[in-house]
Image 1: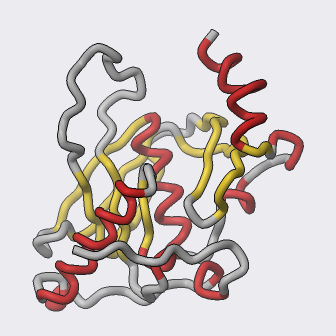
Image 2 (image 1 turned 90 degrees about the horizontal axis):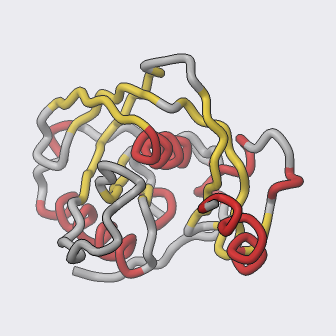
Length: 183
């Protein structure tokens, strides 16, 4: 496996709509290696997800850590992260409830901002084996899936923000906002 270079805001690939992946190409060794390399790159950069355009690939693919609950047991032993790979994802809201929460992005390092997203979604896609899947996601996992799918359409989290007033550098976020979120 190899670490991949992450494209940063300003690179044209981040503003482009990605090409659909032919289901027959998902099982190829090259595509499987791309999934593995993306997962490694995401984990090494402490990301929640990583989309193909973020590693300069023009295809509708992203990988994400599986989050069952944002309130993980702090005393639990760290487990090997479960990685979800979704190809050609299609999202529909599963409820009308929208929540605003903090997001960051590996392609926009050092910044956080409040972004409104659907709390509950349904996503249809192909998994890394080329099988059609239909899954429901809520909370933080739904946010990650929406964020990464936006990348496949050339949309950055900054585009979704209602106001730029919450935009913060990570240090200021940790000092002034993260503490308030925990209280």
